[in-house]
Length: 319
Image (tube, rainbow, N blue to C red; front, side, top):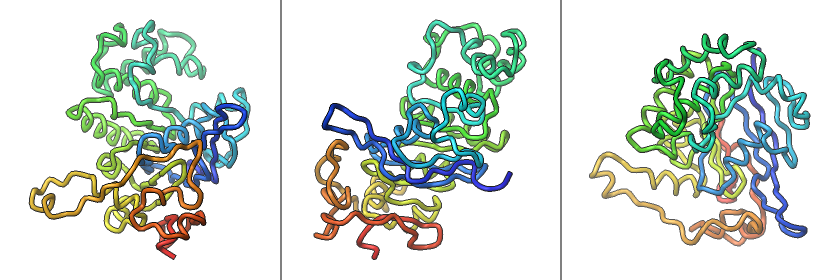
């Protein structure tokens, strides 16, 4: 089937705190992902990336918008209706220890989705899927009988990846899968994810706050700020020609290996902290920290629109 595997239109996710206050976690996010590609979603901690991902996979029920998976709208499906469709989309979580059941062996952890989706009828039959997947993520059969606490962080995340991929899903949501790992292990996990994408024809929604990692693995990159998408473009184009001031700030923070370039380039430093999502600023949400903000930015919300072919941004300075 041609066309995007995932289409998200005007996705909104609000969480009521009490009778008066609401957290605006995600506001009007729109994007699509083509089959076999990787869309990277980047932004500061607290900008709504994980809330967006969990709304897409329906851990949270969206407040508004549309989610279309493989041509079928799943926005308002009941959990019972979603059950057979969950086989198509799986998630790799940020914390490999918290996301694994400490009372289950690695074999049982990886076999659980196979049994839940009736791919196999017994745990013995599941071994035919579990052992090859363990070896594919760099572990061995001997690891199958161990428990999560016996592994390092990198090994635990490999178990989490094996659990997500054992069903051979079409879409995998990677929610900051390397942020809890040592730097020396991060590149190994990213390279493994890329290899498995090629082998299995996977599509990734890859979420991280480190733009250097996101631009390495992604076909396209979306930049989020305080619940909204502020820029979306091909990875190369975003790095070559960033349009939004926030994207320029993130790129200026990425380390450069050349010491001469590093000494001469200008680092953009933002003033202040990210505003509260319970009380987002009027107009452009970035205007409180933007060095180029005008009076118009403080009053009018910029429209997220296409400024160049395939390059979308929401900024009054581009009009």
